[in-house]
Image (cartoon, rainbow, N blue to C red; front, top):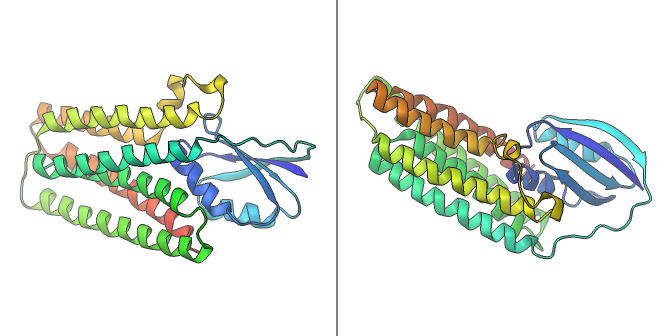
Length: 264
């Protein structure tokens, strides 16, 4: 058996980990996947050819690059028994905040919150696919991935149209207080999800490092909406909210494209 190390430069949260797991699911020869999210490393224990594995990783466009391959005698791969329970928890947190943010986003007229809600939904979809794909056929998994990916893109495109409408036409001033408060709670929720999933890896990683939290795209998005809310109040303009909303919609589409690649 061999151990191959990949650097995944765009893997900064457990959502990308689950995408990779689903993409590599069913490839012959893979014995175990070991993820080191803070270091953006994926270690694959496998036998036989590496070509299919490497091709699948590259198809996700997460910046995968093979660093090394070497023989190994390791055969003991203990999995966490509570991994499924943890996935249910982070799925519930992400989906709950999708509902909270999309509702408060429409009420407060904030496109930043609406866009962030779709990012939360994208993470919930990934965790959901990880759970519901277990025991299901490969065809079912691909069908669900395609439906989820196209749904995400459709919602993001509707969001783009609304941003353009507000930018060039109707001026709707968002409630900056709601933006800041809701995004602050979403920031805490994302930090909790990262903590729960990272804590499950080992006792050495039970206390998450601050540097790990602030490399997450999800957390950066939350901070972006908070800053946009402050700028909306300071400048008395809806433009910061629209700009942040546009940026997040682009990230949502990128995430949806990765989900679609699971359906190939």
